Length: 115
Image (cartoon, rainbow, N blue to C red; front, side):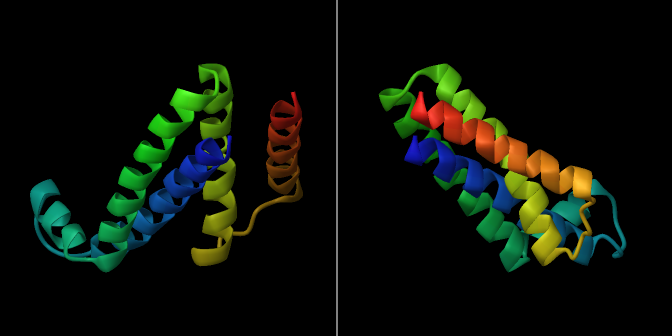
């Protein structure tokens, strides 16, 4: 279960880091390929790709030790991780309802872990 939660943290954080890198290079000239090349020169984008790879490896380890429905539920929590990390790094303001949703996801994962 720890590996599945670690994968969720990696995937959620990677999403925010890649968004930060894409936002930083989105104003330059060129089409999609040029945007990709500029993003690949950003350290945040590369760290995000590395975290995606680490998350994938953690997911594989988790799938070997716990049932697939448990891993799937834990990986779905990456959306909550994305929200929390975006609130911190991108300075996105989450509403009370969104914070409540993050809390419900965490409570659900705690119950799943206990089961």
